[in-house]
Length: 181
Ligand SMILES: Cc1cn([C@H]2C[C@H](O)[C@@H](COP(=O)(O)OP(=O)(O)O[C@H]3O[C@@H](C)C(=O)[C@@H](O)[C@H]3O)O2)c(=O)[nH]c1=O
Image (cartoon, rainbow, N blue to C red; front, side, top):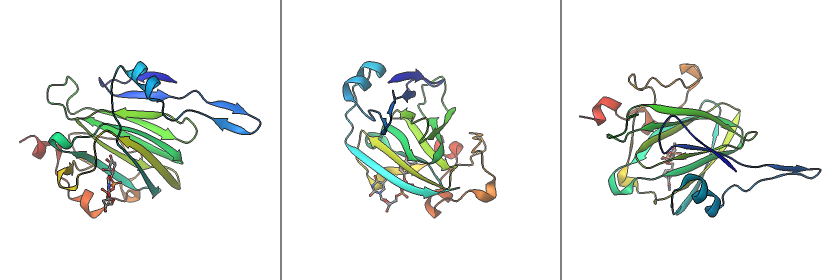
């Protein structure tokens, strides 16, 4: 496993060591000891999630408020997505900036998104299976987010607007500036 810190402090790309042989391939998708050694973090993941989506589906940008905030370790086990993490830490030099990366079933990269971020992804392949670990439980009443096409965030989602499909809930999320009032 190799690790790369992104332009946003605390946000890491994890690149697994993939063993290939005549049968196929193998990699460790999570190893607590390695994760702690490489990130220097002591995170206790308590929930694993999976979603399946078709091309153009955009889930996000989501986060849970206050004490319900979640750090996430995200990856794609089928297909390809553009994954985006937006820094919402008010004291951060990269507040309001985002990091975007293509995660797919070829590179098997994982993105670690700390607490204090909004997170979302759009599916670039016909279908994608998205898997992630969270360090805090889902809590419906704490759910919120930012509208994916927020003008201040300037995220390039790589697809045409007409190709993007969001849930009703995500379509009425507030803008970034409303959040900061
Ligand atoms: C996220 C979540 C949803 N649900 C339920 C609520 C709802 O009925 C159904 C679908 O929920 P959503 O529409 O919120 O699912 P989704 O849009 O996939 O939400 C996820 O998006 C990505 C980008 C994230 O970062 C995640 O943290 C999470 O917010 O699943 C749970 O039971 N547990 C959970 O942890």
